[in-house]
Image (cartoon, rainbow, N blue to C red; front, side, top):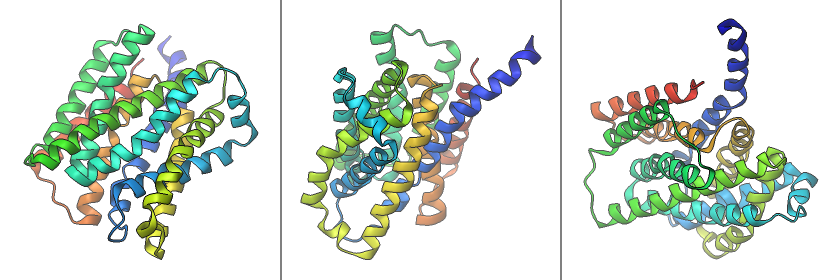
Length: 295
């Protein structure tokens, strides 16, 4: 019986959690990439460029299938998801600008599993098992260790609040996308329609704030990378993985992102990560293994 089920579990992991983990690793490069933006490029322009231009890319990749989603006549979930898509990058990059890359990333992603659990419990009636609770607890404890070395000033507190908003909106658009896929729409179609609609809000923000970012070769390179890799490619992977992964599991797996961000901060940006930070990264790793191997 166990031998018979093993290949099925392996296929489920490869088509679900593994794709979410790969997407999360790509998302973890955003803070490091944004650190190379030219002086004067603010968080609003970086966020709007990332998901505004990336949203157009996802819409183009989806092609006609995205328009079928738009014409389906059931636009409630799409509107909710697109609104969350528009708010998320503005809150997320502002959070990192105020509180720092580590804290902004950690608060946004660390709060997401909690928001996801509440949403799935209240709306979908999903009961989360003890394994998820242990894995999420280990991951959140690890996040606290990673950021515990930093003092909290007014900017940090405001940045943390914006991080919570980013975490909530991330969960909302992930949940909306998952529900739309369960109604029969393909992952690329859903991601293209949702992020394309969100781009309608973000592109005017980019036009208003994007002068310093888009006015130099280095800024264009940063914007191009953010739109194509951690946005376009990562969300194609995330959408495919979300078809076989619950929202609560996917948001817990996305806690790999701050680990990647912290490691890149040390190796590329020159930030320092103490023993507590490395221990925190280890706890997150254990939590991810537990949740990604749930039966």
